[in-house]
Length: 148
Image (cartoon, rainbow, N blue to C red; front, side, top):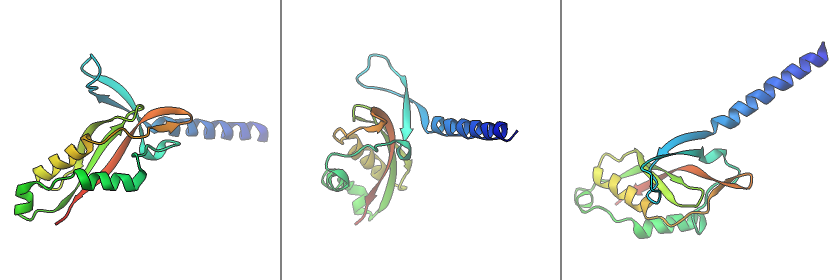
């Protein structure tokens, strides 16, 4: 009886582990500008659920430098002294390309939101995230700050 109970508990734990592993993958409809078809379904992992997280060339320091060099404060927002932080999400593909840039939480000013999306869209290829030894698409969330 105890052996059967141990096997049942082991089976339940294994089943819950498998369900947790499946929950880390999201299916996202994306438009690949390099593909001939209009839209395709892509499996995207969340940032925290991959073995090796995607990395910007030059690491975190390189990412901050890139944002500071490329970001341009929109004139009207600067003139009206509007500040804010734009929270964006994007997908780093298995090949390292950045795609599906979206604003999750805007700053309240549309020009700042557009500028944050432009900065992220111009990023070079990242080092792709990995599950095991396989490169996978990973969803990244990144805040872009605009301060005077």
